[in-house]
Amino acid sequence: MRTKMLYAAVGLAALLAGNAANAQTSGTVAFLMPDQGSTRYEEHDYPGFKAEMAKLCPDCKVIYQNANADMSLQQQQFNSAITQGAKVIVLDPVDSSAAAALVNLAQSQDVKVIAYDRPIPDTPADYYVSFDNEGLGYAIAKSLVDHMKAEGVPEGSGVLQINGSPTDAAAGLIRDGIHRGLEGSGYKTLAEYDTPDWKPSKAQEWTAGQITRFGDEIKGVAAANDGTAGGAIAAFKAAGVDPVPPVTGNDAVIAALQLIISGDQYNTISKPSEIVAAAAAKAAVQFLNGETPEAKTELYNTPSELFVPAVVTSENIKAEIFDKGIQTPEEVCTGEYAEGCKALGITK
View (cartoon, rainbow, N blue to C red):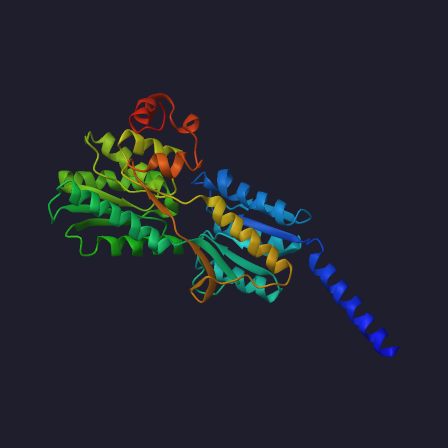
């Protein structure tokens, strides 16, 4: 009888444990983004994160804040999230170095930190989710080099390199990838610039100076994102340069897709932010459950999951952007871009 009672107790404990494992997760998660210089955070990252959290954890509370490129403000938002009871903070840092102190603060209070998009090199976060930024930089530069060679641009010709913010570790990875893509290409880098806060206006101002300095020696521009690319293109247009030399980009924002359709920008990177946002939400819920998210790789001593993006040019923009439903012709093929969309087979 005692043996039967023991087995029954064990069975009941197992049943209760199973029910506990299947019980609805709850808790508070903060999603802290760095700036509004790019529209992606409001239009893609946060909506994607919020949707995935609602699916995985309907009873969870999500705190969303954007620091508007102000590290002091982000620190206040981070502290506020902890005060509001956040047990997991998804952080895309304004300043990757300064964010190390935030990671230390959180971990001292048993709060998990998921580094998002931009890594935190100096102090390992609990997890890191992003696209492969070094690989991204290499891909856009390699695409530029291949295009220039296909167009018969002679070796020894010059390229400008426009990097992202010097306080953004992800920008540093993209920069390193661009270096690798240009290395051994036969083309020389005429000048290189780190763009404060990724501001397109700063990229435009710098490019204008380089056009005055180098003129038609500039045969290509390796720009780290669509904002800096747009700034560079605006500088060439203002200087009366026609055609604009091929310019790279990254993020596949609508303005960049339109510039590719019009022939003013050569490439961009399709990296639907919702993919990374959903992965961050999944990791956050696992942490709330007391689980450890699976590390696909490691970067800066941090367990990481890095996604591989796709290079987009006029040749594959229909397949990569429109056929996959990332954007619709109604959103992109407006006004002056309507004829270009027809020429590329995006619309009829």
